[in-house]
Every structure is written in structure tokens, then in C-alpha cells.
Image (cartoon, rainbow, N blue to C red; front, top):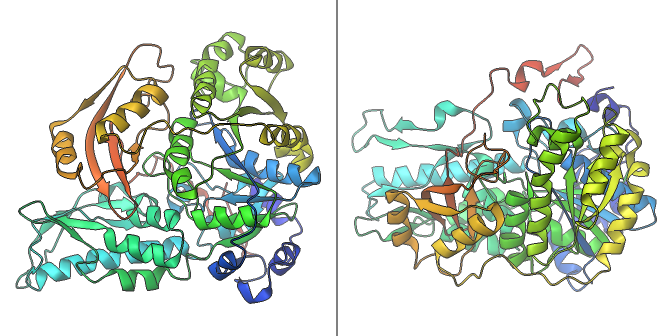
Length: 550
């Protein structure tokens, strides 16, 4: 049975039943249909003095085309924690339409570990990403209108990009202003996917509506001839942008198929953005539950590093446990086996590919945190391979065999019990670099300590950009945009056996998000569609049921 059919055949509770279980007064709940709602930020203010619950971060090995099941694991773990009598809540990211209609598919879990309503969450949901897209493009319109009306602020260079929540490679570079109107100056422009927009990052890092407005005002949209930055505040635009985002900033609540609460809010990618859900959603979850399960995008070198070096500094809370998801299929793929043959037993490939998992374990320990490996079990996995993996992990990290795709929360109780034990252990969190280091020092700390690079090379353009923003970006973290498939910046270099260099192509200050984006290799902030996009298989049947979302 497909995921969408399992979700559709599950019995959901009205969302007000879910919020009632959490004792959230109805005055702070805004239902959006039967099964989803928004929770007012005023409620977070009301309960701000409550003690925080334990925070559990779910991450993974470097991703493969096979999928590792990170979101499925997160959902299963939350259900498993509730199964063993713990009060647990999920705090996840929102799916983007780009991957839903592209190659990656949806992001609501799988099998019997899903959040629902699955179709709504994977498509328009509550309109948050649409609001972010509109705010982004309103700012673009105000920039070009200002230039058209006389350019009083002296724009010499516009650095703000338009965005769209779809994969469209044709928009990576465009020419605008071709109408021929008086004072209209044609220029090159660019599109990002909405989840790479600085407004998405700001949305996820803001701690309140006032903080959101402040950050929006600080966005640098361009520079004068003298390289003086021009901000959103200079354009008097932050008020209207905040109005567009006001309702979206209220966290969304839905449920798992086992009727446990899930807060899903914000959705930046981790390869081209910072890969974490919103701070307000995580804070709300920690006030409502004893255990909060959250995740960071792609592998631990990307999402987890950014969660720990960027989000945790603003959250002022480090994870009490870190779960690293791995599958035997993915480990064999990293060991050199083709995706068509990973279901076959291959002990040698497993032994070769485990180096990827061991590097991620080592990296989490560098942050002073306690990791546990979740072995996401498939029916094609042999006992011989499972036992081999267990033996290879002995003395390296705690581990648990997961069967929640098939069994739901019952298949994750072992992981849940072990995570509770880890949460009670002491850890001493330490970010991988100091904020007062130079931009280059921060980049090189991540590249060498986390990726394992021998060296870092900078393009002439990157050096020029660093020189311009170094003072402006003082005490800001770095957000490195890199391929998710490899520790290197080459997506085909899976094993990273030989020494490698990270190539820095460009550097950009995101002054509202309060971090520096560093682009490496051939990374693109507007993805393209594959030869056969998922959109070809998505349809609606005669009963108005959506089909084909996975």
C-alpha cells in the first residue's frame, strides 16, 4: 500500500482534540479545516516561563537517491516516545513544492509513520511558503520601482533576488525591465527557490513578530557606487513585509497517524540554506512537552552543523540527544554499489560505506553531544548485514534497529527508551567555531573539522566579497551551501578517500538572517526538474482523491 493510501485510511482526530490534549485554550487556536490549525504566538508568550522539555535532534548520513527515512524516523520516534508513556511532540519543517513535484517527493514520512493530512501538508498547507514568496517578491518590486522613480538611494548593484516555490532552472538567470518604458533600465536578475530566500531564513530564526520586523528591515538589498549597503529599511518596506508574514509566523499544528501532536513550521533547505524549522515552533514545542523531536535537513555535515552552529545560538538550547539515521542500502551505495543492486547482500560494500556513518558520528561528538544510530530497517536487509553493522558500531556509538515504517510507534520503542537514557546523560555543547573569528576562519573550521577537507580555495570574486562584508558580518555564523551527496563539494566523490579541497565561489551577507552564505562547488539556489519529474505522476481521480504524492 502506498504512503498516501495508508494516510488516507487512518483515522484522524479533529485538530481541536489534539490541542485540547495539550491544554491549549481555544482562544489561542485558529483551526484551518478539521485537521490543521495555527497556534497564536501570544500563547508562547503566556507560557514562556515554563521549563523546557528535552530536545532530540534527528539527522542522517549523507543522503543517497534511495532515501534514508529521516522524517519517517522522527515521526516514529515521537510516536514511540508516546508509546512508552512520555509526553512527546514533533517539531518539523514544512515541505516545499519544488521537491514534491521534482525528484525528492514529499516530506511527511512514510508507511505507518506519517504526519497528516498528508496531501495538505505536502501541497499548499496553511500558505506559509506562499506568504514568504509574496513578501520576497514585494521587496523586489519595491526595489525596481525605486530605481524607476529616480533611484534616490543610489542603487549601483542590486543583490536581492526574486523567488518561486518550484524547481525552474530557466529562472536562474533572467533579464528584466524590457518593457521600453521611460526610465526603465533593463538588468540581469536571478531567482532562488523560495526555501532559499533570506526571508525564509529570517522567518525561521525570528523569535517574535517584532524581531521579524527588525530583521526584515536589516536585509541588504543592494549597494551604492561606494559599496555602501542599501537596506529594506531604507526602502521603508519592512512594515508591509511584516504584514504579509504576520499570520504565517504563528506555528502550524497537525498530528501523526497515531494522533500525536506535530508542529510543522518553516522549511529552508539544508544544502542551500540553514535547514531547520522555526525557532518559535521549537520553543513552543519545548514548552508543551517533556520531549521534542526535531530534525535538520540532509546529512549531519549540512543540516546538523547548521542547526548546532546557527540555530542553537539563537535558540539558546542544545540537543540533549542526536539521532543519526542510516540504512543498509544507503551504506552499501556509499560503498560503491549501484542503486539497482543495493538490495542484494554485500558485506564488503557495507564495510566500505560505513566510513560515511562513522565520520558523522565523529562530527557529532566534536560538538560535545551524544549520538545514537537509528538503523532504519528494510525487508530486504539480511540478518548477516544487520549483525555486521552492529559489530562495526560497537564502541563507536549506541544503536537501535528501527521498524516503525511497518509497525508505527511500536517499531520505535527500543529507540525511544535508548534516547530517553541518552537525554539523561551529561553533555557539554561546544560550537565548531567562535563567532568572533574571521569569515575565512569560520569557513575553514567547518570545511576542515566537519567535512574533512585538506584545504579551502577562494575565487577572486569570493575574496572581493569577503573584503566588502567582513566588518558588516562581524560575529555572524556562516551558512555553507554545498552538495548534500558528499563531504566534498563534488557530488560524485562519495567515499572522499583521497584528500580534497573545498572551492568557495561566492560569499553573500544575509544581514537580516544574521549569517553569511558561502557557495561552494556547483551548488545552485534554484534547483531544476529531473528528466522524469514527480509532477508527471501526480493526479486526481474521479472521486477527487489526490494520487501520486510520495
